[in-house]
Length: 89
Image 1: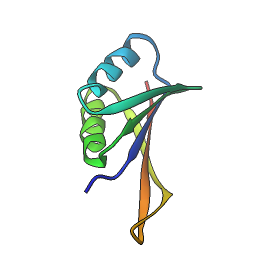
Image 2 (image 1 turned 180 degrees about the vertical axis):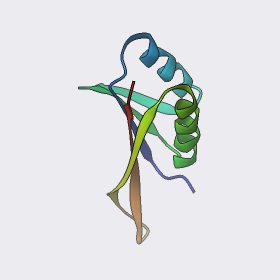
Image 3 (image 1 turned 135 degrees about the horizontal axis):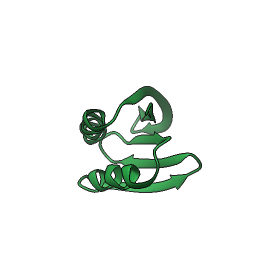
């Protein structure tokens, strides 16, 4: 079952950000530039978790996790997973 997920990448600039985004495009994603970084939208939370583990091997990130209510579908609660990755370098 697919769950939508957002990975927020903050405090990364320049070539590091470009290399991080190039790894994101291996998955089915949409990327949006926002103030302070980028938001990467995943259709599947498992792909997002794989992507986060790849990034943690490359750079030192602090990871925070939260959920948001995304509505109801067929009587079931839909949850949007949000991961915030802040670069500590």
